[in-house]
Image (cartoon, rainbow, N blue to C red):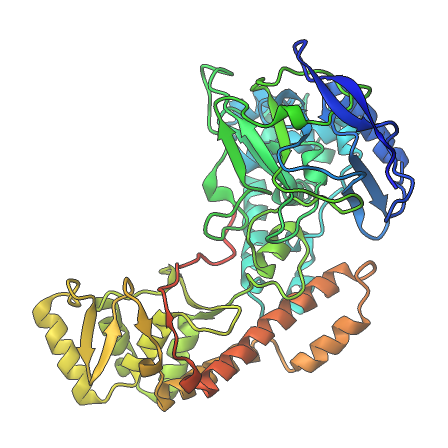
Length: 545
């Protein structure tokens, strides 16, 4: 049972005192979870935060365990609108705050590349770095696939959505290091210790940026935000929200520190560790802030030099407080953050256009395939991705992208129906945009901007094609069955075999989607509902520099 609250005065900054109801002591008498482990590294980190002007709620417990690492839990109930932490921007590790700022700017580096240099430089300083207390808390590197060996990538990710992407990433990051980091050592040999700027150190820094960086503002760009990166992720279950305030007055010569072309993962509007609010002034509910006046400095409530963590829903006593890194499938989560989630409803499987053409070539001539794809494109349809990497998505429920279904219909049209449609498109020059439909062989091919019934687009030959594509996609995983993978996962230890565990989770979830695709194609009569056209999502991975 919690103690009776005691009314105390808490200074939130600038002499602005707030009367808050705080428990008389920080622990309840009947906790539903073990007491927070005050490890040496956490104690040192708290001392460091205090010296840098961080503020955090007495209701937050930082729990450190060998199995799960650091987590943040609520010692008593947190309310929506509570400001539970404030982080000074100048205490964040960015290209603007690092001691390597002049070197980074002289070399013309920015974005993630500049931030990687900043991390390596501060690590080279050891205990003399202003961020020593924070860097000591971080792992040397996060267990994301870019730091796995090539053997591990090829063995554990074979057939998954990540296999090729991670191979390409590793090659591009290596080239990036050769072209940009090695020349730095010649630019400032007296300031940079080569021991801390090798390829291994660069990959380690990139892994930390991938999994922990936040977008701070236009001036600082992306950076490492101590304390904010302690909140773990849970898809679709955001408790606390990272908020950045505007910094228009911080510099007359601002440069955008974010280079969107350097992202390791992209999925529609992928958030950088969390959705971020940028506001001209602090409009959060400071009155509900429960900030420790014994361990934290005071900061003005509307100070744009501070970042905030704000509760967006109530969290009960004893529960873990989660941030969310975006609504991401397991391929994106593993690629960027190094973990997966069971039964992730945002998982998808991609079927490459190349695989579709391979199937078509096994049934028809190459000329037939090229002509049918050309007509499909002229009708206004296109796959996801770019010209060099085109693909179709299969949703978590096993539903294929409508563009794939229409392409298969065109591939399987009788010659007379194909020539009739080809002629009408050539004469009209478009696909009847005004009505949103194309009449073909007693079927209506919906334009992608209109609702549709898929039942009429799933004759037996199209369903058979979908089954063949599912088998071809499944074969990429190798000879082991999904049952073999499930048994391997059952025997696997998450603590001791983290890479194997999460790669198996990814494989199994993808293969389950292919099973659902087979069910979809085997029971087309049940596909009768009208569905709105799906928004095209970008492939979960992207080349990085």
